Length: 230
Image 1 (cartoon, rainbow, N blue to C red):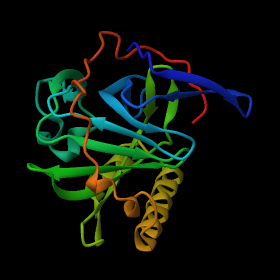
Image 2: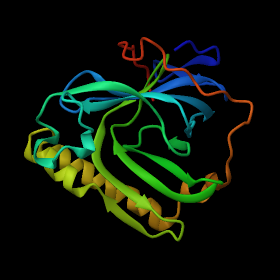
Image 3: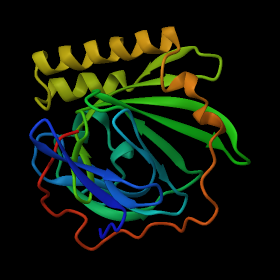
């Protein structure tokens, strides 16, 4: 994805890629247990600095997502075979309202904000994942199955415990990694309980620039990047 808003600097001996607001980048996830990319979402940069990367996934954006090789939706596949039967990827437009994604450098999770139609705030969603790895065209990570939903009243719930357990049963995640993921989840819970950033920062009142167009998914969405520092 061509990005005219990218700027580079040097910090800690590595090149750091930063993007100006309005730049278009890819937010991608590697397949679990493999090197390939199976999720790619073109997004618009809202903010990018040493403290936070914030991006907007607009409604109607064409994305890449996994699908079972027989055409079945991943979430319609029984849990027992969801991660063992062959997968492929396909293009599909993001349905419903858009999503604001927030990630702090080096943290093993990102925080997503969801709204109902009419900008009625719905919830925060803590996606446990590998810390984002930057490259010239965007950021890459690997999803860790376990998630947390944070409600407007500040209560919270674990999500996808069944998928987290199944990933361990089929060998996509060993006990050591699972332990680190659960510890990261509890660290996120401590931030929630203290109502630290980004929950206390008022992002639920943010709105996208009306001049922004929906980003286009590039043909080389799965290209191999050269990663820089977070």
